[in-house]
Image (cartoon, rainbow, N blue to C red; front, side):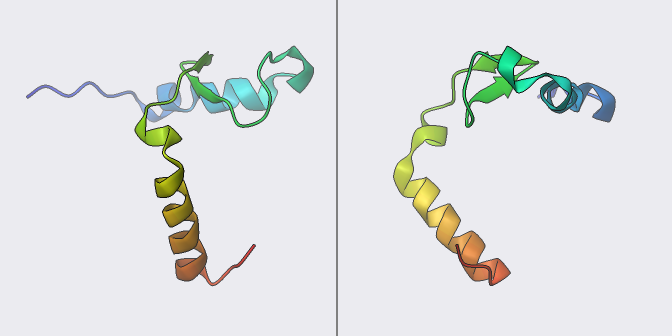
Length: 67
C-alpha cells in the first residue's frame, strides 16, 4: 500500500492561510471545514451529531473541564 503524505510545512498551509486571512474575506462563517486552503464538504462521519456529543463528553471527562 502506498501512502501519500505532506511535509509539516505543507500540512500547515491551510491553518496559516486561515490565520492570516481577514475573516471578512472568508465567505463561510465559523465552523466551516477547509482543506488545501479552500472550503470543503465534511464527511458523513464528520456530521454525525451522536459521535460529536460522545466526543465532547469524553473530552470533558478526560480533561476534567466542563462547559
